[in-house]
Length: 250
Ligand SMILES: [Zn+2]
Ligand SMILES: [Zn+2]
Image (cartoon, rainbow, N blue to C red):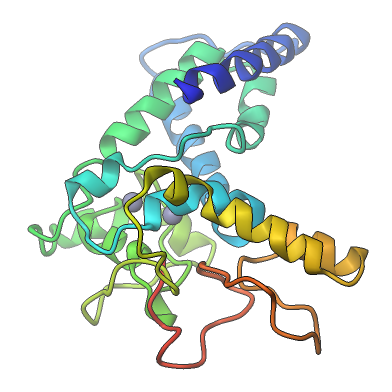
């Protein structure tokens, strides 16, 4: 329902951009795989952005808040797509029809359903090299230090190999957040990180810290600052966990 409401302005923006661009990508048998490939590329950057920018993480955290890892985890989708759409603007500007983008996004989401399982150990080597698999995605949902903010790919894992975010599954993953929220209340699951951001921004001592609390990594701390008033519950690349207690995350 919320999702539907958010989509109205997004469709309007996409349509406006599509009308303005002189470029057109026709939907043909050979352009469709290219569009899927391009959508997967921008999915990678959107997903990575949603892990390393805290205000985006506040949305994506829903997908990572489960301490279990199974097919129902795949269905834990954020309640707002408001933060995803800017990442696909280049595709629309290149002349991809908004409906074609919607189709590719759906295909990507459907692909990702089956990788949320512990029942499949490894796929054939060539498949593991090219595609996102249960093994790769278990790492993405794990909270151990070396597994944090890794394997962002949607359908293909080659993006992670290309852009330095790939880590193979070696030790058994521990699922959940670095600091788990211990609630099944769906409202709290969906909003807790936004609430934490507001608290941290209120407690911040200047504009540099305020913007950092919103736009830097989820675990970002200003240099030589006191501990934040609220707990960050997130995975982060900027502040890798150092204690054993903290190493339990998304
Ligand atoms: Zn993620
Ligand atoms: Zn997932």
